[in-house]
Image (cartoon, rainbow, N blue to C red; front, side, top):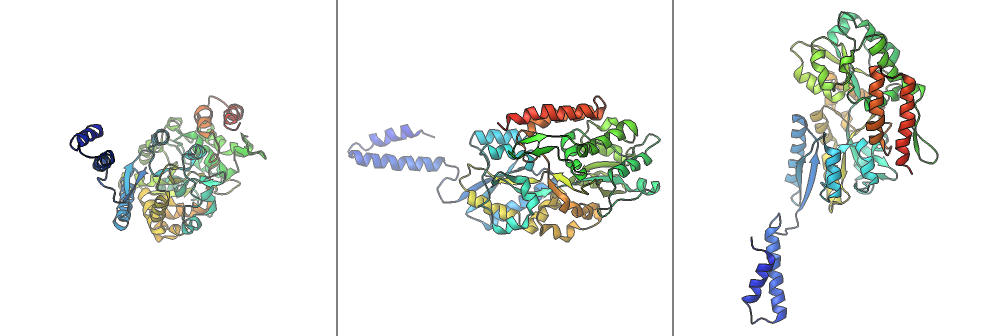
Length: 444
């Protein structure tokens, strides 16, 4: 393609008799034609294109999301949505680079605990006045709290998953232990006793996959009343490790080191890594996110009986911290109104159910949660749905500096505690002393 200067020179030479204003008009017209030819759409027809970066990764969820994008495009000829595939493994760094480079997608998929720094950095649009009333009222206040920072709302929480116990049903039945239900769950002491009873002869009552120990420990600790992060009258957050915060880590440590009802070998494992041992009868139970049921349903050997149990309850009952999946709009998007309309479409109750079923997770919307498909006994759907009203904002949700605190302080401290390298008092000291030094830098 010839460059604009060359074209302009040619235009001037081929029209020597034109007066200067005429030359300018001709040059301008030719430049406009050139720019139109080089534009992505080829012509300015008023059609808007929204880039939507999705982190759906399982076949069912990718298919459900792409189907909804196609349905939107078929019914909204003036606003086309372009599906862009992202990855959970690199989303934070990728988005940060895109934001700073002015190339962020209009609509972006992320998790609530990844939004706080983006929101404070001015990269995300405040959705308070953009979202329709229907959507605002359909999602409970405690879910909105996960994406509210200061006076603004910077994401729509739409999918969530509790942590549950996935159990070998045959093993539990033969052992004659009481099967917990959402109405009558195990307490943490009872859970420890059950895992002792299920252990022996080279088999373990439970396997803890703690490759990422911080979120699992903190979110489950809410059931015992643990908060860890405490906001003072001045709005500043400090770490305070109380007796309630110690209930869950002390239980896990006892199962590993005292009762020997949990193997040390899974401490560095992810959830998927424990499934072969679970299927092979090495562990009776594994605490996992609700969405792991899909892998279990697909990979379990023929005839393997498994069931979903609620996580143990403490002083606060079945309360659990969650970091929902979210949808946000980039502050730099020139089409925020259209992007908000797309979010409203994507998160209509029926569509939210489709996304939840595709990801094997729970929707946040109250209407979607009523769908009969989410209340079946098959694959533990009913157990998970019964826990939905007890899911609340994760303790670290709005804490600035949490990512650094987690990576540099909490993760190594919990890993050493669970491995037996340090005791509870040293764990407390590190979380509080070292942790507060990190958080203080973000709150000056």
